[in-house]
Length: 250
Image 1 (cartoon, rainbow, N blue to C red):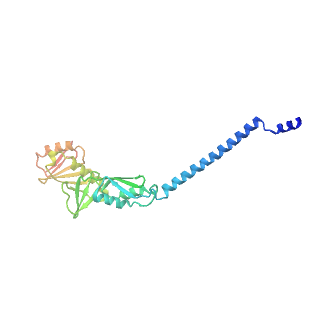
Image 2 (cartoon, one colour):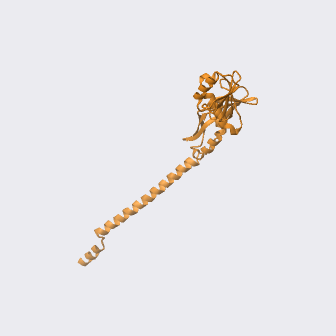
Image 3 (spheres, rainbow, N blue to C red):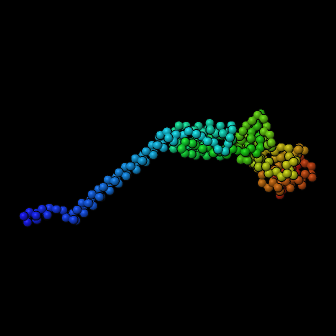
């Protein structure tokens, strides 16, 4: 009997073996749980990607124009040509902005997504500083010399500038606008018209018929001071483009 009990007890696992088995089981469970967590995370990411990139949950529904209203806002929305119904994440906002920038009435454009279903087009309209006659129509021109807003009637409340309207004359127009805006009051009241031949050759036509070679827009106050002193002498041309070396032509 004692020999039988000894053989049976020798087949029972030791405490160390039981602990080893338990640790192995726990490791196996943790590994399985870890793998399940990874699978769940991957599935969640895949689901989110599908939800945002391919489902209708975030499909573009609205285009909002900020910075402009009325007819100009309508033009912006039309030119933007937003792909309504396309998932918002896949909307090419850069391409939309590039199309809107083709509108000459705008000085700046930016396009951004507004989740979950909107694109916001933010614009800054140009501000007219003068008007230029081109044949039978009038252009508005801003301080950068950019032409926009062509109309058949002369815009009210803006000074007229005689300047070229071709694409390469932007700096010439900008110089003319700068001179117009920078004329001191004492000279402005004597001026009947302003013309720009180049960015360094802006001329004033005085109401009495004399011409002033003003030059560029710099040193306006000094030029005005010299011109007012020269007007004591009757002449057909007053040249103050270099105010330290003025000249007159009888």
